[in-house]
Structures are given as structure tokens and as C-alpha cells.
Length: 520
Ligand SMILES: Nc1ncnc2c1ncn2[C@@H]1O[C@H](COP(=O)(O)OP(=O)(O)OP(=O)(O)O)[C@@H](O)[C@H]1O
Image (cartoon, rainbow, N blue to C red; front, side, top):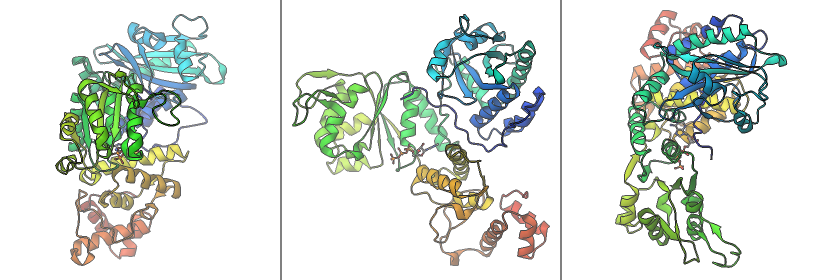
């Protein structure tokens, strides 16, 4: 398990990077991404693009944006051009970037061998060989350093020149200004004011801004730094494991293991063994002592998934771990002490199981010290569905080495109106399939969703609608028809108006009414 592995996903579709002639002018770098700052559709994607373009402009093989975590006196890599590991942390003053953050002056290293400021551990960690390095500070409006922009290895094997140093410093100054208008900078500022909360780990991999998710983020922020046992409740595929990880990496155990045990994936007879391990000779074939997950996770967190499937016979033993942090291995008499935090998840109604004597009441109360209820995707609102869909388009395209396709307006409407019984996992799979099958644009027909009457969303939301066409209003039938025609002509507004035999202006007005843009 990589601690702090919540490095940024790329979730916004951007034009491809220039491959031939990198922009000479510093301002071109920012111009090409500047429009994204205001919109900040996906901050990680924005930062990623920024770093990619800076590397290209500086004719460097790699680029990294480091930010300062004031709570821990460390720099953490927030975005990297071709990153080998998702996040690296260095102490202030450590290595070239740490030095730049501490001293506030650019650093250029021509040959790392024997160079005092070069921190070889990073190359060892990434497996990358640095031959030249340039780094410049990012300063806020008051002149304090809050990050470092770094590029590695001048392309063509050359060295970075003094002119390059000036250029990177100029880029850094403009990047600083751009970043200061983002929520990321607000996060850094908050962390400076409340230094108990280390930044850089928070929810970068959890997509969602709906009110329910924001409430959950706040609860995670409160619960994570403690050792409180957390129970995550929610339907299958709604992100329970993702939140379990967020709790782990936002807490003091982040550098220790997070070990998962899935009670539903194991036969009841093996769960005890899996959790607590066994002694040599405990059963036929047990020819040596084996550690269970609690021992493996010592110092860290055990994530018990589908805890409702835990056999009654093992529940008592788990209760003892929760109360006294101790147990005996299967077939053993020696008491083993462990220091673990427990996070559990279930999609079952545990209170009902307690009433039916299938789950121990004392265990139930012990595990739900903090209870987080994750809403199903259909209740998170159309905006979160869109955010997630765009995020999965970008990640699937990256995974399959494809150009990220565009989501047609109708495909998006369709995604927003579907009820998602399989939640985020279903959305993720649906988008991945569409990304692989489509050419250039994801249309409604690429989405592998049931083909029963497919209601389109009501204006401005993903509320449930009358399923039967017989119950639809005339206006709704018109709206659906217009959107279907629009999709059939691949979004061409003039062609759609012609097919519908209405004026272009009438179409334009109707699309606006439906909350759709008139471009395309
Ligand atoms: N808010 C989210 N942002 C980004 N990805 C998400 C989000 N929620 C879930 N996912 C993704 O959806 C998939 C399913 O999530 P996860 O495994 O955490 O769900 P779960 O509730 O633990 O499911 P199960 O109960 O079936 O084990 C994963 O690939 C996860 O990364």
C-alpha cells in the first residue's frame, strides 16, 4: 500500500500537447490553460496540464509542482509530468526543491553527482535518473513561498542555461498568480492557519461536490485524525472502500499499512484464520505459523468490508480486538497484542440483523462509534454524475491510451437520468466501455445501459420521472424528441432545426430552456 497515494486524477479533456515546437513565450503556457483556472472543473486536471505544458515549454523531460504542507514542514508533489509514484514528500531544506522552498531562490543543478543539494533518494524511489534540474519558488501575494516548480533533464541531453532559469522563474511567478485564484490555494492557506491538518491528502481521489458528500468530507476530516472505529454504510459500489482509504490516509496511521479483509469473499470457515492467523499444527496442513491481517496491519488500519457477513462465531473474537486490542491465533494460546484502527463497511441493515440475532448487539455498538452513510449515486444530483462521468472518461482514456472522447449532450442527459442501481462502480464501467467503443464522441448509443424506455432528466436535476410515456406531458415529449434528433445529427443545431422543421432561433430558445448550450 502506498501511503498518501491520493495523487491527482486527470479528469478534464484538454487539447493534446504540442509535440513539435514548444511555445517560446512564457505567457503561451498560461494562456493555453488559463481559461481552466476560473472554471476549475477539475483542479487536478488543471494542475496536471499546467505541469505538462511547463515541461514542454522548458524542453524538459519531467516537471513537478511541489506544494508546502505547513503542518508537517514538508513539500509534497501535487502534480508531476510523467510521474513514477503518485506522491513524494520531502522535508523543508531537503534536496533541491526543499532548498528552494526554504531559501526562496531558484536552484540549477547541472550534474547531480556529488551535488550537495541533490537528494538521490527521490531517484531511488522513482527509478528515474536525474541528470539536470531546475527549480524556482512559487510565492504568494505577501512574498511567502508556498510551493516550488521543478523541471528535470533538459531534452537532448543538454544543460539548463541561465536563460532557462530566468524563464522558469518568470513562469513560476505567473503560475503563482494563477494558483492563488484556485481552491487549492485556499486549502493551503487554511492549513497554514490551522496547522494541525496536513494538506495534500484530502479527498483528491473522491469526486463529488454535492451537499451530502461535503458533509461526509467534514465528518472524515473530524474522524480521520482519531482512532475511532468507523462504520461505512451504503449500497454496493457507492465508494465505501474509497472513503475507508480517505480515513486512513488522512489520519496519523497513513504511513502504516491499510489492510483489507472482505468477509463476503471468504468462506465462513476461513475468515477467522484470515483475520487472526494460525499457529503451526492448528489444522491439517498448517505446517508453520501464519500471521493474520490484524498482525500484518499492526500500527495501521484494518478495513473489514461486508462486516455483516462475519460469522457469529468470529464476532466475539473481533469484539475483543475492539475492546482490548488482543486475540489468540487459531490453534494458539499465546495472546497477541496489536495496535490497529478498524474501519468497517456494510451494505446490510445491521440493526435488523441485531434484532434477528444474526449480529451481536455489543459488536454493533462498538463498530459504529462514527457512522458514515454514503448516499446512492442517484441521490447525489445531476452535477455529481456529470463530474464523475467526465472524470471516468479521462481516466479510462488514459488507461487505454486513447484520446479522451467528448460526451454528447444527449449521452450526458441519459447518464444523469439513469437510476444507477450499481452506483459509482456501474457508472465507471459504463463509461469505460463507451470510451473503448466510441470514436471521437460518446453518444447515447455507446452507453451500455438498459434499453427500456429511457427517461431523460427533468430540467436541472436527476429526479425520478414518470417511466410510462403515456404519462408524459406534451412539452416533455417534445423535449425528448428534440434531444433525440439532436443526437441523431451529432449535435449539429442547423441540421436538427431542419429535421424538426422549426426555425434555428426556435431551436436555440428551446435548448436554452432545457439548460443546454446553443453551441455545436
Ligand atoms: N466519489 C467517487 N469518486 C471517484 N470514484 C469513485 C467514487 N465513489 C466510488 N468510486 C469508484 O467506484 C468504484 C466502486 O467504489 P468502492 O469499491 O469504494 O465501492 P464500495 O461501496 O466499497 O463497493 P462494495 O460495497 O461493492 O465493496 C471504485 O472503482 C471507486 O474508485
